[in-house]
Length: 401
Image (cartoon, rainbow, N blue to C red; front, side):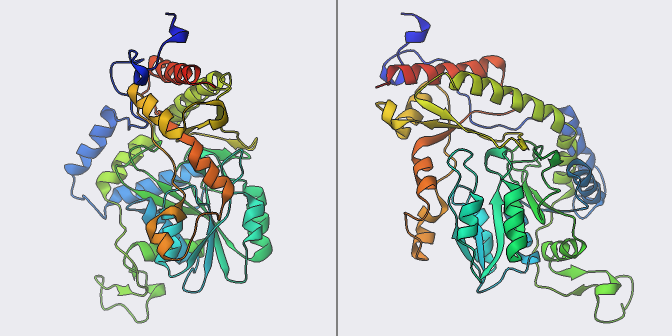
């Protein structure tokens, strides 16, 4: 039997590879290990000089004026909403195709998330759907750079300016991406990042918020550090001495450690290398999968020069004898470990208890039924990439209608 006609492992054939390949994985090198060890040997494990060094580097990478490092991407979204003045009675528009934190950040502030449907080609939030959901209660838009592709920032900016809304970009997937030549992090009113291990660069856990606004920066720094300040200009009385500080907001302990900051500084030195390899893999996937009629590849805005965090494969159920679950299980049998990003947020029991119901965003719901995330990370070898392609090809060929 020729390779192109191979029986998928789930149907009794030999797997395309003998070892598992995961959908995402961090890459660490000796420079990363040394950066962390140097901090462990230093006087400061937290609240030390590496925080300022990291924030300066993030500004250099993104072109933003200010950076505030925090403990994770969820914390970044929370303080961004707080800085935007989101509170009880407000509404925040976001996409359902995202991790729950993109909507939870509104709930944390006492506001109500409002879900707008997606563009069926890019899978990002549809600006016209955002416009359709604006009310007098709308305070902000949290637009997610899903898979790493930039949202349609031109149109979202127009809408936010028209209605006086704060534009927050959830850039958890998109560090390294540019939109109209400008890096993610330098365009929206605030942009949040996540540095989880499967992201393009990692600090283990960690996050940041970027902004050009001095006002937002001051509020972000306060909310991420207990609402405490040592700046005399912000205090209500003269300091008692050099030890003096005041709590002027109800903030949170969202500090990043110097250990994490040192690792991220080292990782950012490799961002160009990571970006180039991810783009190589995406090009090879697109080239191969565009030739398979049973699946679709994600389209991109011409303005977005994307550093992809996720590679989404979308099946065409009308052309296959298996559904998405069947495809997922067939790939697993080939030792290709995939994931699904994401379950629409309002499907979760917690949101159902709040009154959200299926049917809110038909395009997002249809997308969920048809997608899975293929392996994509810097350390994938060319053979790894070809194994993924071969597994998809043989499954589609075997189960084609």
